[in-house]
Image 1: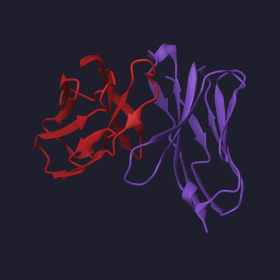
Image 2: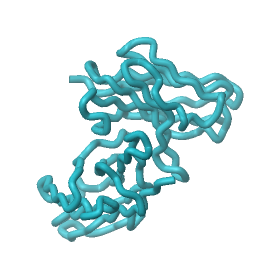
Image 3: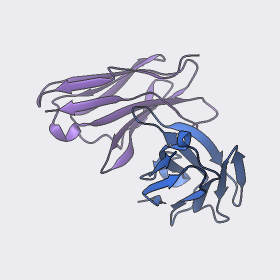
Image 4: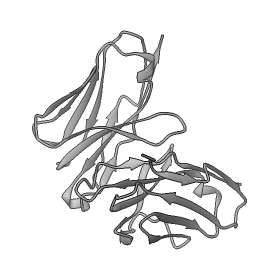
Length: 112
Length: 114
């Protein structure tokens, strides 16, 4: 069974701080995605990475796919209260028929 | 453009009752997914359809769960009979033909079975 482990599970920081969320697996993924979910809503896709070593930036968010395509990280610079939410990584593997396997999520709280 | 629409947003029912959750995917999307989210197990795929045909239902917990997609704009997830352990948030998502994993999620249905 393929698993995606996210760390930390919970993160509470002050506005302006930087943070990194990690997503790790022992399995290789053909692609990996990051979603953000706010209370009472469904997950919203932030980014898809497909190439080992790939780095993508979305404003203050930087996403990286590990060289071996087994792990990924999300770095937020100068966090703002609007970044508060549940961050989910999801990997797709041909061994799972391309279906997404979701991590447990990182609950981020950014206090003003 | 309208996103994925789910109804009802909240459902409270008693154990043993039948529950039907509804979903309207984004127009033009070929894939439709049903997920369940709980604190303990996170977000789990239950079943997905391609062009209205069920492709993989290996995530459906047991025979009490069934899903249908009678046409490209409507799908249902039915639980009969419902049990307290079915309490969760159920999400429907859809994606276009050439981007299977770039899924657009609906707002979810919060189900409570008493």
